[in-house]
Image (cartoon, rainbow, N blue to C red):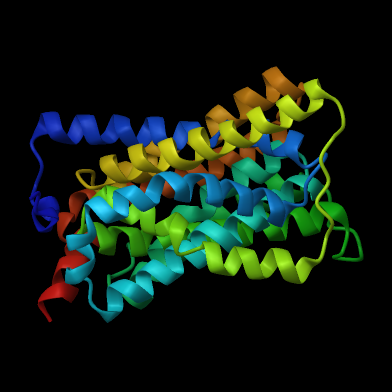
Length: 328
C-alpha cells in the first residue's frame, strides 16, 4: 500500500514538474465553474446546486472510500477536525458563498478575488501549524488589500450602504476565499497522513449532512424546467459542474499538491482566475476592466514576493509543518 507519509520528502525534478502541472490543470478547471453555475442559478438556489453536486460526486466517492478504508484507521482526532473543516467549510459553505457571490457581482471580480486565498492560507498556517510568516508580510498584505479594493470598487469610493450587490458579492467571495485558503492548509496536513483519493472523497461525503440541513432549513421549493430540451440542459450542466470543476479538478489538484511545494503551488493556482476570465469572455462576453487588471497585478506581485521567500526556506512548507505535528 502506498505510504503517503513520504510525500514530504524532496521530490525529484521530474516529479516536481509533474505535480506543478497537475496543480495548474486542476486549478484551471475551477475556472470553468461559473460556466455551469451561472446557468444553473436560473432554476435552482445556491444551496440546492451545491447539494446536488455533492450527491453526484459522493456516489463515486463512496466506493473509493471503501477501497481505501484502511486509511481511515490511521486518522487521529486532529485529522478528523481537518476533515470537518475541509468538507463543511471548504466544500459546503465556501461553495455556497461562491455561488451566492456570482448572483451579486460580475463573475470576473468574484474569480479574481479568489487570489486572496494564499494570503489567508499563510495566516492560518501561522495560527494552526505554527509556521513563521514571511518577511515584510504586513507590507505585502497591504499591497494585496489595495489590489482587492481595485477589484471591488475600481478607483471610486465605496458608496454608502454596505448591503449593495457589489459589496455583498465581494464579501461573499472573500469569505469563500478564506474558507478555501484554510482548507488548503488542512488539506496539506491530511496529505501528509493519507492518499489524495481519500482526502478528495472525504471532502464531498462528509459535507452531505450539513448541506442537507442547509437545504432543508432554506425551505426553497425545488423547480425543474418544463420541456425535454430545457431538462436535458439542466441535467448536463449539473453533471458537468459536479464532475469537471468538482471531482476531476480536486483529484488533479490534490495529486499535484502531494509533490509540490506550497510556494510553487501558489503560483500554479494563478491558472484559476486566468481560465475563469477567459471562459467568462467567451461564454458571457464579460470583459475585465483595467482597474481590475491593476488590482490583479498587485495581488500577483504580493503573492510572488511571498512565494520567493518560501522557496528560499523549504522548511517552512505546510507539508513539513504537518509532519512535525504528526511526530509530536
